[in-house]
Length: 312
Length: 249
Image (cartoon, rainbow over all chains, first blue to last red; front, side, top):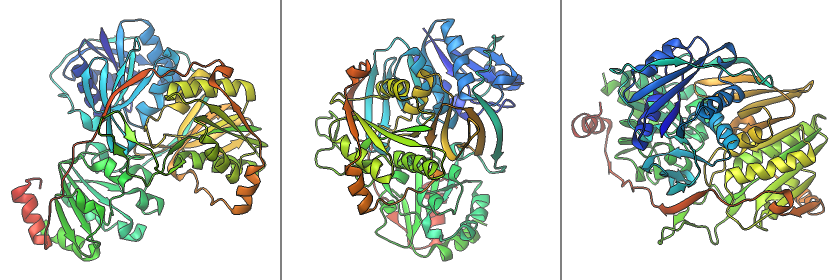
């Protein structure tokens, strides 16, 4: 049986989350086919063809797939799946994959296994529940396993060195029920939050959106992505797509620096698999110190500038 | 226009659950239960649409044991007009819930179904999308803004890297993200009023749905523990440790 991976891309390039998903597909075993559905996405398809372990790339290229509308992309996955031979259908557990894949599962009348962090066998997987406070081992008896993959659970496969064939497939028709209006994507030179080697996150302790900006030079120094706690997002200090936690992004960088973050359960769920955690907080009883490798108790408004200086 | 709002009874977000020693699940005996926070946002959004004159009736639905009636009363205290409990003691997984909701969509013919994007117990993030697929409806997940006019819903969605706006023909399914609104506090008079509102109880079989779970949970275990490290006295020590001990900068 082959494994079908739905690629995440922006038409121009392949997103790193696809490489983590391919890694999960390889753990399951069998030939890995990657579906790239988009418009003018030839480059993304070529990138997928170079990823280690990919046997074949299917390219569905049509205007109605450009904006990754869930209705159309799910229909494309179903059309490819109907052609047969796939025991597993995988996508990254990102905003993209979470949007599309449950539609596929429902149409196939199978359960979806969300956010897997481990592959025990081709029908048994581990996934976090209750904000990561428990890990469930679940088994699926469905004929097709539809799975979203937590990217931090699987090391990305090599992006180069392979040369799999790219086969065009017939694109599905537009559903006609939804249309793309526009987007506001923040342009940033910083690394993507979920793929960054270092993440600097701020919490409510920063006090204002203005003060939150004091983390910019620190992130610049470390080549880090910026993150935020839900409390900081709720208070309007930081945009929602910076949110790290159960209901935001899950990160596992080499270094995570939590500044002015108390460490609510829902935040810890998003970062406790980081390799090294640093916490800076004035409250020495803050739960964040319970998971931090290095804790520094004190006034962040004095510590952060000092830290920036010390990194010179 | 009718709006259907499914709500789930979950362990309160402030409770840190414990894994049972026999690894059969988590211990939820005697813990505080509440409405899933994202569902509260969904109810609030529906009530705001009614206050704006867009919606005429809000129907709250919950699937699960008898105690879900409390969750439905809360939804009605926020402003839902009536409620339906699809009562079962079977463990419900998202596909089964989506099938139940599909049957209710067929029966009630709502123009919009607003659901939370995920429940904070199983963290599945599936039900809204599955319902949309089963009912052949368009969907807008992770909504941070919802406008309804001229038979269309215009929805701003939280996506990686920013926001995206899409337009859906009605009927449609919308799932809520955090910033869509801030739910109101329920007042005592509204709690009293909610007690008098209609709450119908049906069974999944009445709707022609077999709720048997598809996924088998083999075990539930503790995540690998992370122990606290050391407190450092100053910035210089911190930087030295990050450089020489952890070797991450």
